[in-house]
Amino acid sequence: MIDKIKGIFVKKEEEKLDKITIFINLVESYLKREHPNIVFDLSVYKNIKEEPNNQNEQVKKTLIIREIEKQFSDFIWEKTTQKSVKKELLWDGYGLNSQPNKRIPIDFSRRKELVFFREEGSCNRCGHIIQKIERAYIVLVKSFEQNGGYNLENLILLCQNCYSVTTYNSSNFSEVYLKLREDLYDMI
Ligand SMILES: [Zn+2]
Image (cartoon, rainbow, N blue to C red):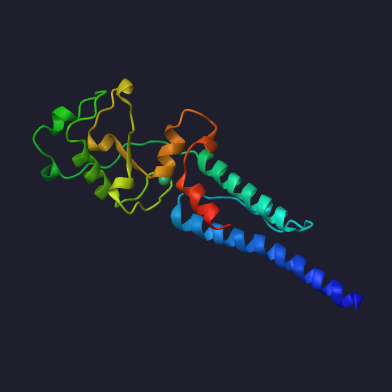
């Protein structure tokens, strides 16, 4: 009888540990698919033998998410000049409106569209495929202070997550809205 009861507990323990492993596997395949340029290292969370209980499982998952957010935000990426597009695709006033300016040029949405198609919707930093242009962000390789303008070579495409972590003026990324965080919490 006691053995039988023990058996139940052992089984339960394995089940709990498996849940973390399952969660990590799920999360890793999500990260590979959604942010292929970034290599995440979750090895410290694998194969840790602990007294499992429900609360522990939730806490552990939360810690894993936090670690992913940190690694996502810490990922080092350098802005580099991008490809030009064929001259035929440019329009009157393109050169003039490309000049460094604090004001966003009147033809900005046209520029954004060309950058989006040039990159096939792929985020320059993490490699995420942005499905809709409305969810894409544009940043300058060189700022206007560095004499960077709105010419297409100076425009970089970013996804919401990368835009938020690279433009937010604080190291405290937990204050920033991240689609990544929302998706990961949905997996808990
Ligand atoms: Zn990105």
